[in-house]
Every structure is written in structure tokens, then in C-alpha cells.
Length: 243
Image 1 (spheres, rainbow, N blue to C red):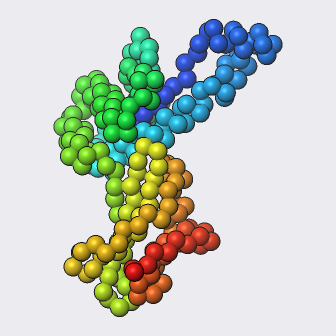
Image 2: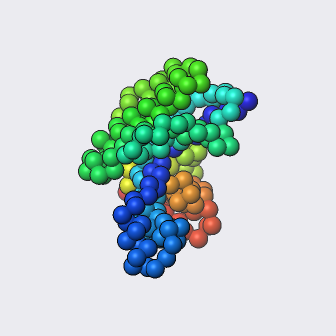
Image 3: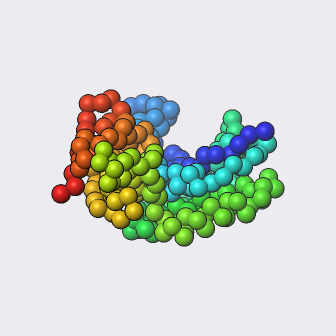
């Protein structure tokens, strides 16, 4: 048995025969070499960019989703493709992938909010297809999608617990906001009764766990009125102060 805990949207590489033939002629290489070259020059960055943009919703889905036991799946991968003539579901080492109709140009033209809505729709379309195929209970998946809608598609959470100032008057915490283009990290300071005193953005990073995690090392009070976020290496410090 396996626990399903990860979800992702992917933009698989599709071969364009005309482009490959053109590369073969201009670079004087064989089909395999031309394909690799086309992927590296024309597709790799698109795939990476798409994954970064869509991670705000897939990560939010993972965070809100409970434990779900399956026979053979720990991850669901939605392959966003223009041509869905190949409708096969594939399980590769516990990762179930399913193709869903998608147009990259239309997606790119959308606003950030509309992109988030589209991401969730793509994710749920793929999940529901796999759920039907494998007799999974679809309710837990729909409940998670509903939570995301109720939260306005805003993937925001508090990193660790709040810490109290030396004079016991204030609490400070780190708030992470995962958006389409950036991961924004804030320091929030409030009175002990919860009244907010300060909310200041201290860092923006790529919207990827590995990119922003390094900035989250420790939160500490420097004085009664100054708070610092220190990165994991301890060589970078972001300080905010109550004025």
C-alpha cells in the first residue's frame, strides 16, 4: 500500500517534425541529436517556467490534502498537452500520469488569478479521471479543491510558531505567500492580543520549494523592537523594526 501525497502539473515535450528536420539540416545531425537540441533550446525553459508558475496551486493542494491510501500511487502527474489522442494512464514507479487538453498560449495570456483557477481545473480533471479508473473515493479530492476556492486561491501559511519579544509585548512570525511568479516572505509583528503592528516583505524568491527554503533559517528578536530572519547558512539577515 502507498500514501498519495504529491501532485504536479507538467508540460511534456512534444516533437515537431518540421522543426526537427530543420535542425537536422542546419546542424547536420541525426534525428536523436536534433531532438535533444530542440528540447534544450526551445522546450526545456518552457517546461521549467510552467512548473514554477503552477507550483503555487499544486503545493497548496498538497498542503491541504489529507492522507489517502492507495494500492500503487504516491503521486499524481497531470500532463498538459494539446493533443490528447493518446489517452493512456501510465504508472511509472508509483506515479500515475494522465493527459489533459491544454493550450499554452491561452494559459500564458491569462491573469494571475485566472491562471490559478485554470491550474486547479487541470489538476481536478486529471485526478477525477484517475479516481474513476481506480475506484478511488473522489470526495477527499473535491473537498481539497473547495478549500482552495474558499481561500481565494491564496497559498499563504505561517512558517513555524510565533516568537515573543524580550519585553513580552509583541509576537513575531514569518508568513509565506506562494504566488504564480514569486514566493514572498513577510515578517509580521503583532501585540499579544493579536492586533497587527507591522507586516513587511523581506524577501522574494522563485516560486519553488528549493529556491525559497534556504532563506528560512531562524527568526529571532534582536531587541525589544527589532526582529531578524536569518537564512540557513547564517550569512544573510533581514531585519524589521517597530517604529
